[in-house]
Length: 346
Image (tube, rainbow, N blue to C red):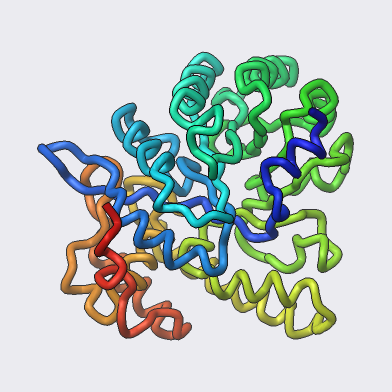
């Protein structure tokens, strides 16, 4: 099967322009920090009117930090079909430091979700090895092993030099794309857009931008380089981003640009507000803080702060700062989504 056919088979109703790397929520059971599947399902239901494409276990979903049991719990969420609407699709991140660890995680994912076991499963997302000294040949060999292991399952190449310390160069990606038809997507969170700017060997690939800010300018429908956006902020600004994507495909360019600039400023202030957090990453912490406000509405401060993967919680001071920011932006509802969506999510 060639790349075009594989993409059409995986996304029969099209490849959307807005994707969300879903947060992983946590709860303590039997003294262990585990994945709170009902909490994740409650959030998912608020997003699916605007977002149909997701990434589980990405950087925003703590994919680098999940222990083996937590990752298995996340796969249990993924494989529970009632959580997903018929038209949603999700990728799963295999984010590990070394090639051997990535291959092992890919094997686990495919054993749980592959061969039609999870109809909404759309493929794997893999970064280069975490190695600042990695050569382009080493990066090529890393992805070659993963692509061979994946077989006919779509594979997304994830550019994340902030974590890996290295980048896949355009010529290396072009060689892999020519060699492996199951390499179908490229997500770039570097902020430099080097690969997309060259366009080298990317025919037939789906290009997704993961860097926050300047959203409308990035989209091909608005003269940009990317087919879509895969954004941490889609966890909490799904409607605004969905509306912006729609605007970007229209003729009101000034309105589109103005709204894109507003959302860019909001995102910048949000990430600055969580910069003091010592645990987790800014993408996860920022979205988790706002999701807490959106989930509990005006009563957010009567509920314990959201839990992180290690059992710690976001500082209350951070939540207060973010609450003031989003109250000013009028993005927080009076009534949260969580309680009335909690029932029936077993």
